[in-house]
Amino acid sequence: MSLNHIRPWKNIYRRTSRQIMVGNVPVGGDAPIAVQTMTNTDTSDVAATVAQVQAAAEAGADIVRVSTPDESSTKALRDIVRESSVPIVADIHFHYKRAIEAAEAGAACLRINPGNIGDERRVREVIAAAKDHGCSIRIGVNAGSLEKHLLEKYGEPCPDAMVESGLEHIRILQDNDFHEFKISCKASDVFMSAAAYQKLAEATDAPIHLGITEAGGLVSGTIKSAIGLGNLLWMGIGDTIRVSLSADPVEEVKVGFEILKSLGLRHRGVNIISCPSCARQGFDVIKTVETLEKRLEHIKTPMSLSIIGCVVNGPGEALMTDVGFTGGGAGSGMVYLAGKQSHKLSNEQMVEHIVEQVEKRAAVIDAEMAAEAETEAAAAE
Image (cartoon, rainbow, N blue to C red; front, side):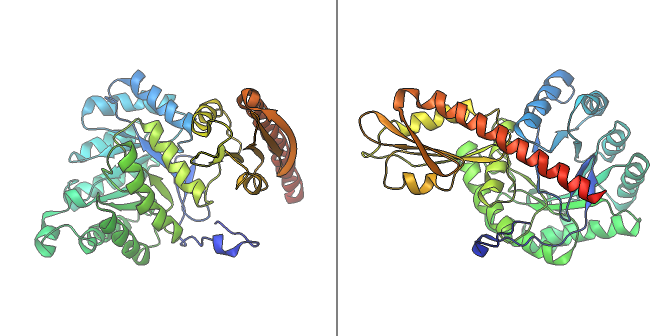
């Protein structure tokens, strides 16, 4: 829940949903919105896949999905799961037996596509495997692969058809006394996705996994995802998210976190507030921000940094951030610490000094958070 008593216009009231577990990650209820990505390696190449999973986890991914299109992939899955620091979701299409094999290999969750998983008998076998091995299930509806009878009924992919597909499979799971499931209804069309998710949110209390599928490349896909997912999250809909980009999975994780951070729903790492720069800038803002983004990737502590080129908005923005730098004249600017004006600094020393100040501030915040957690734990005893 994103609640702000001082600025109530920033509040987001999340939809109430049941909570399930994906491995050791709680999904739904009052759990933080989980960030997910998917590997694009050949899953049977264990080393390459594990390396990509770990890179995504280091970037902040809570859950990683891997494709299991054949038996060699599900065989490799056992080693991938064993070496992964985050829960692994097995992506299943067409071959229901791959879902059973993935459950046996230790997958935390099985993603099944209602449009191609097969008849109810096959789904029951997948449910039995999930029960036997403690897996959750994601019902993953895609506009591009809807069931034939729904396409005949509605004439084309549409929100109603997607929701009907999802609800049919919720019924199958619930009829078989299986309730550890989440659901998604993705389309590459932002309008279709948003409409389907709104209908779905009203029709079920299951946790919802958000995504705009096949969103495109890094720039275009980021924009489509920010619009579609951001709109739904702002409405309180969504318990996990995946940004689908034709790019490195690490980029998907970064974009997902930035969307959540912009709405105050998750906080991780340094949130850099920077101006686009203009003729008034006292230093090269764009180059400085680009450098700082790379230099500060190791900081996981949630905190804010303002990098503003001139005094028009610089002092005001710095008052609201943990560390700030505002450009001035004569090759120097002003450093702000914890929202207060601190000292002048030359532009040449700026990057190294800011990195140092951010690291110091992060250490202070970490210590404060640890002390607060210790106090809460003591009070609970």
